[in-house]
Amino acid sequence: MILRVNHTTTYRYGQPVSICHTEVHLTPRASSRQTVLLHELTIDPAPDTRAARKDYFGNDVTAFSIHLPHRTLAITATSLVDRQADDPIHPGLTPPWEQVRDEVSRHESNDTFDAFQFIFESPRVKLSPAFAAYVAESFDPGRPLLEAARDLCGRIFTDFKYDQGATTVKTPIEEAFELRQGVCQDFAHIMIACLRSIGLPALYVSGCLRSSPDSIGAAASHAWVSVFCGNFGWLDFDPTNNLMPAVDHVTIAHGRDYSDVPPVNGVALGGGEQTIEVTVEVTPAN
Image (cartoon, rainbow, N blue to C red):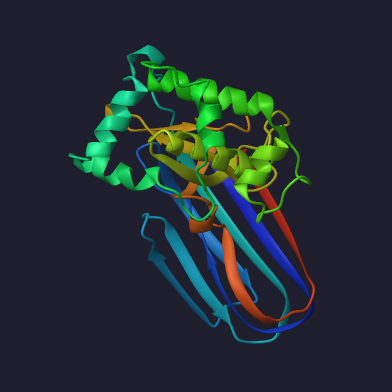
């Protein structure tokens, strides 16, 4: 399916900003399941400097600076993406989760060596006995990894309430877990903490979701989880919507947690009070 993605972030400042330095992760990530046909990034006011690079995780990053006073900053990313679905996998064909855990702990192959770095704590994902206890209800001994991960995804969807007012981008994961409320970022972090607490590698995936009345979190940037499944590679799970992402999800970037891949991040001199408005629209291309 070919999807058109329009992502706009607008900053409005109470006082002029004299200079700003900003970094964005807004370019869709190319993969075997996703081909980027077009990507344009428009910045208003026009930046004085602008540079593109790849970060440590292989994501496309654009950094820019504006040196003239301004009271509004609008960043618009327009992309055209060809999204392909994976062939379905029967859960019973995937290996027992302990087998994957042990292979990763030995990290004797290139794939397991790469995955090994994603079993540890990271800035936004702290491990605790509470996460280990929660995940244990899904990961019975010998259970196929895909079956267990789907069960965990469904439990988070059922046990937690999606509430945009319950948390902020800075809310600690432990607080969201205690509240049993939050948004897609919180649910992704909680699922990642659960998986890492039993030694399974898990990635944070930043992206967006096809606009639909039935999709939770489609009006803004979205987030989900990818778990390493041995020879089956990395498998994606969206606990906010209780599904495995397919053609309706567009991957932008991935990292250890949100702190590695915020859509927009920067510093500004001046500005006073500010408001931020984010709009995301993902629709089939005509």
